[in-house]
Image (tube, rainbow, N blue to C red):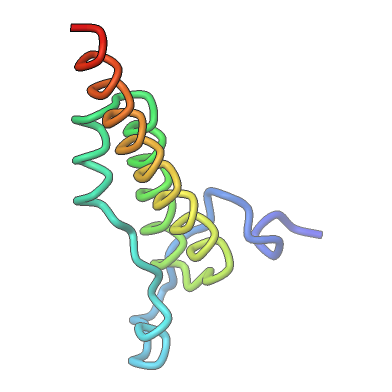
Length: 96
């Protein structure tokens, strides 16, 4: 089986414009929240940016399963970054 048929990374965008029906399936990439996550807690923020980019690439290829999976991962890393930042601030306030 060819890797392109499996939806592996590195798949090329479509040679044609996407139809309006395909555009309705676009998964959210949460790029602005990922940038905020990168500012708040760098390790999780970098992962959030990575999965946000992967979401965009999957959307362009109409690979909806990967797009939604990466979108979910982006949101998880965004939330982890925010919780880690709040936890660090909370600990610093208790110590100081």
